[in-house]
Length: 404
Ligand SMILES: Cc1cc2nc3c(=O)[nH]c(=O)nc-3n(C[C@H](O)[C@H](O)[C@H](O)COP(=O)(O)OP(=O)(O)OC[C@H]3O[C@@H](n4cnc5c(N)ncnc54)[C@H](O)[C@@H]3O)c2cc1C
Image 1 (spheres, rainbow, N blue to C red):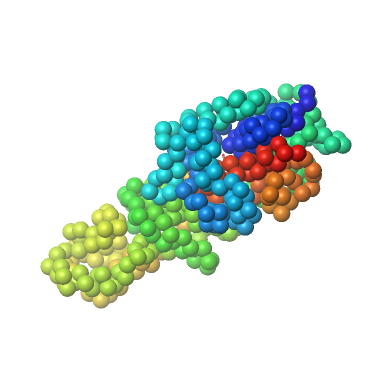
Image 2: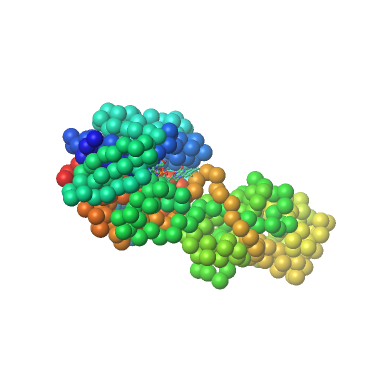
């Protein structure tokens, strides 16, 4: 069977490439998906709501959210950025809404809307889709590619696009390697920190809206909401630093020291001294003096600073005050391991960026071979950036293939 384009992988990037190519040309397009489920990650993404993109409409600023791929993506985002994603879905009847933190979801609040839109667009454009058919080998034969699948069938295609997802356990990585492409080691990104520390005991669910996290013996630092979990620390502030440090922290086998400043926008020493003047008779344990620090965390930090329950602000001595400032602004923890973030995770690593032409997503090694999505050594922080990369890659590849 012959197709102008065969897309390997029925995920976000594969669908977007196939739809773009089929909608803008009369080329025949086939998607081969090895599992029984199409767009499976879109379905489970964003806790079932699908964080489609991020309200960040300036290409250079948008590309700043990608620990790997930052420079390579500036050009692509100029051609298909977050506003194009919004328009693309809107033109197909899906309106997106923006949450306070910039994440964009379908107004319906369910990923089904996105899955339906993609399936509908693919159907309307005449894209053929085979599930339960994994590609096992691809070879170039003159101007065309010969593909073999695990069903024993063979296909011929003028162009092939690999969109097989993260390369940790993907057979797609083997396909890319079979053409001589370099694969950077697959390493988890967007993970949470395991910390066994008395100060966090019984505080699961407590969060601080804007903390600063620093990793010792490293330049890594991030800002953002931090959430205390049963295992340690999570939330965007932690996920962000895990992404930027994905390789470095893997090399350190996920054992390192961090410092959390729970109040990066305050001068805690000055705030404590003001309290001594204004609320001298009040006991420190009665309430948290900072809106950002929930009472349960405040009590835990007071205990860690050895401030007795009955102490009033007037009685707070210099030593205790210093210890408390340390807990508030310089709170050290030992990280011993990582956990998977359930809302979103990606793989850092994949096909080397310098072997791909980011204007077209075509391989620089093999004419007619294209890449899109997570199988490339590009990954973003949490917030809709990983899907945006998939849409952008898919659009560029699909457009180039349609135009040839
Ligand atoms: C739980 C979770 C939640 C997430 N939530 C979000 C979110 O809200 N927002 C966001 O931006 N990102 C999110 N992400 C990340 C995002 O899902 C991925 O970055 C994105 O799905 C990558 O798309 P892709 O098409 O490149 O790969 P995938 O979606 O992984 O699709 C690849 C497809 O290729 C198929 N395949 C593999 N090998 C073969 C083969 N040899 N032959 C045929 N088919 C093959 C696979 O079965 C799969 O269906 C989330 C990730 C997870 C795990």
